[in-house]
Length: 368
Picture 1 (cartoon, rainbow, N blue to C red):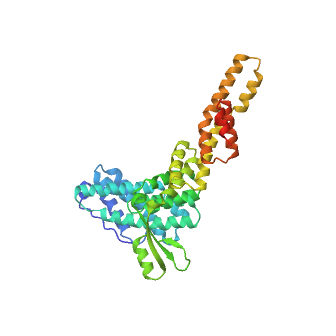
Picture 2: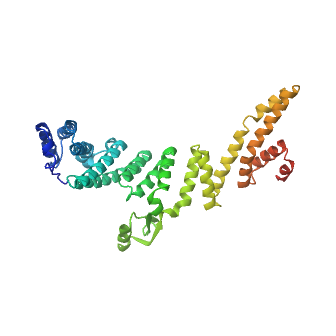
């Protein structure tokens, strides 16, 4: 690990005697090649004290930096012995969010004062954290901890959205595999609207051993493996070429999650891109058929009431009118379902009945 040398020139005028001692403690710990449990406790305690003693903006930011490093250093001390569960505890989404927020604040502060005290070190820590998170995320995937893996990949994306769009896509894929469809919807929406989706490129080549085309992460890796003779038939593909596939997934997710308005809109767009896709056709059909069927949910009860009020003309007429209106309301949904799959017998029978009940006899005759 790169040793961290604390530059105190900018801090010394604002630090009390106690703060100097705490800063010395932090510096001594950071300069070590490894850290004991006692070191970690002293480090965290000193960072907390340093943060609480001062009102100076810079000192508070640096103190928060030390405090944020604590979980990271703790994991670093465990090295390869760190279990997946220990990594999951340390790399919680809240920690990653705080780490990113604080890192950006500190770098912005140093740019404002024209000094590079910790900005370079913070960028190094970001790179180290990205590498650890990448290993961690793939380990969760291998362990089939799909939902945890989705969050890990999302955290990896959040650290560097500009250069790490692939991790957002991985997060969405794992959320689907983990059957967390609400999270899947959120992640695929974000992926669909991301810079990576609009302008990203996938670098593909065929593995000579398996004969399978694989995503090789970046252009450099693609060139390297081709040069080594491990892969062949390289090709580059724009991420947005998968638009039809992503819209299809969003259509299914919106439907699964009960967001019918969004589902209708997305299915229409998906069907336009892939008009012969049977899964899309069946999915859109189901939305409209179920919608129409739901509007007729009280039909049996209403018929029973009508039959029970034959002698009460006023009530009878009211109930007949209510039944006519109920079928009238269902017609647009069944018409749409019929236009998608005109061979479905249930749809034909219900739509024909709806036309007859509402007095549209010619339309009813047209249903064959």
